[in-house]
Image (cartoon, rainbow, N blue to C red):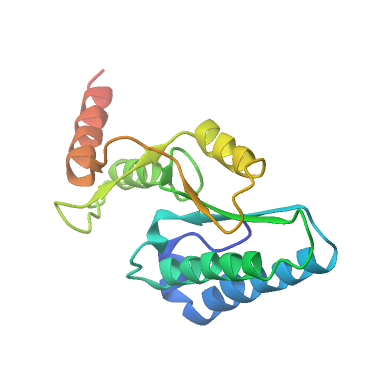
Length: 173
């Protein structure tokens, strides 16, 4: 099982905290129970870098999901069941990805929303994300959390400035 069925957008979770908790926490618990019952050999929970020291409801619910996966991995009554977490940063061009969001703000002529000038994000490609998820199901490290080495963090403020300049250059052609 590759469990990715969770709210992953901070704004949606902040606006609907009870729904976020129900969807992100109760659903993973139910899927974990079913995986135990039916002896599913591999369970991979797709988490987020926001689960590390979470400051919002989305990060907290993902952190709770990781905790549940670790908990279920400890009570392994069935041999050869593997429970893992996979955590990534921003997947380029995925739904809710930062770059398309900033581009949309620029194209609409609205202000670009930056949380803080020093804020940074890690980025990865969709193929890197898929590879990490698939590889984790073959690694028999029950209860572990896998994190893709995503290189250097990118400053969001500088990235937004680059995207604004790119848009201006494109508009002048």
